[in-house]
Figure (cartoon, rainbow, N blue to C red):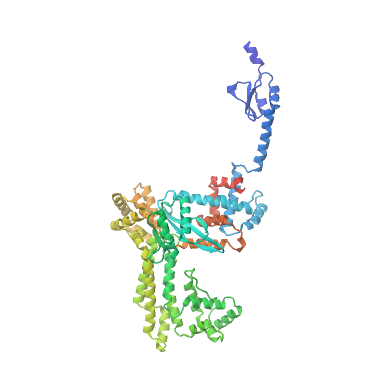
Amino acid sequence: MSNKRSRRNCTFNDELAKEFPFLEKRHQLGDSEVYCKLCNNSFSIANSGRSQITSHLNTEGHKKCERAKASSKQISNFFANLKPEKEEFDLATREGTIAYHTVLHDHSFNSVTCTSKLLKTFYDKKISCAKTKCEKIVTKVLSVAAIDLVREEVANINYVNAAVDCSNHKSVKLMPVMIRYFTVNEGVKIRLIDIHSLKGETADIITTALLETLSKFKLDSKLVGICADNTNPNFGGINRKGKVNLFFKLKERLGREIVVIGCAAHIVHNSVETAADCLPFDIESILAKIYKYFSIYTVRIESLREFCDFVQIEFKPLLSSSKTRWLSLGKALERLLKLFVGVKSYFLSESTCPVVLKRFFQDECTELHLWFLHTQVHVFNQSILKIEKQNISAVETYSIVKNLIDSLSLRKVEKFTGLQAKLELRKLVENGEITGNKFYKTFDELFDVAIKYLTDWMQHFNCVSYFSWTSLTKLPSWKELEDSMATFTKFTGKTLSENELFDEYGFLGRYLTAEKIKEWEESPICADQKWALIFQHFKNSHVRHSNLLQIVELSLALPGTNAPVERVFSLVNNYWSAEKVNLSLETLNAVITMKVNMRMDCNDYFSYLKSNPELLKRIHSADKYL
């Protein structure tokens, strides 16, 4: 009886499976039971097979599910596939690189619309990276990825230094926040983490904005220092006094001591400006006056060119100095001296020459003072060039300024004026127009003012001097490490294990041989790269170095200059031009963050994207552009 019944039952065979692909046989239900994937129901086809399937298809429940499936398919066709295939990955890589290229080379987002059309015509019809999409890729994907990389890095470090500055861009006051930290694998990193638009420039506003940003990255507890310009609102003047400055407010909010680093490049620049006031004329005013006299007057420039041709001097445009361009004074002086005979002849022949310039060029000692100042400015500018290096530490800066003070002291003792100034002085003395004693009195005064200015302002770097051994110009002594421990504890609140640090000092001595130090001297290498090599060696050799690492992290986190923040303002001015007047602050923040943090050329960035599938998924996902 059961055998006969079994022969009468219909089963779900391969032919039915091919005809109805949304049906499948579930073995746990039996050979005659089928499961409908559209409506999530099972039913039997034992009695009539195909007829029962047809009856199921005509039910209202199944038809409703079919309509929902069709609607879902239409939506999925409209949006991009959230799980892109290789072809779509390649397209996302190209579009991401186009967006990066647009930012890196300061192109407007309007221009990329035309570029996208050309690329579509020339190469790939699927490329679609016009203005709106390109801007969204930058603001919602690439810049976010750049910030995420910073978050990953700072999660594993102990100490950071923050650097800030404020500047107006038309009616908008911008404050970039940059951080500096040391990583074992790559050395010092300097990263931009935010650009604030402030409603004012008071100490409270700046402090609040800074701490908000640091809190987002969980860095407020890791902050050991602050770097900014040497202005009263930042640090309270040369004596670091007052309660309405950034330094005091920050210490008050954090409830602990922090290292204060004024911009050393700014200090050196101000020292030579202050010293130049000892001369019988205001050189900055003179340079500005001469530059302004010729800058926009073609007739005057052509007349000056004729004077230069007459005295056989090659004409070049005159330059002016600027308080915000630290190396400009030397360049402007050099240009004036090259054209001095022609410029002097021009002004003395002019009947309407400005009185201040006529007196300047009538003074027979003018050229002497200019040559003397030009010679001395050179040594200041050389120090600024060293200090302005991107990854230079406060320890290295302290050493550079100390060497500058020593050099100025030696120049004073040896009465070093420079050859051209010496020749001018000899000629004037022989003609009876000046006495050597009078000139050398001005000479000594200039050096005294510069040395005093540098000494007074650099006193705040004295705490950094305890970490001088981290520059690794020689093998450090145990006493140097021991002395630095107290300063370390003062600014971190942590106590290191003296016994463990001494053992690590021994390991350092075995690695840091005289040959290694000589090798580094012959091929100059920054202190942070030296330490990166040392710690990688310790790590590979399984040598304990945690105490030594913490001291080095603190030392190398402290910068010697605020130049990186100044460079951010230069990038902002270059990008936020009159042609990009409608650029939003969000987009500006994203663009500058990418330019500062992602230091790659376009080819390297293309390779970087290609090896980063998660980032490509975000570029590919259509919801990023809605």
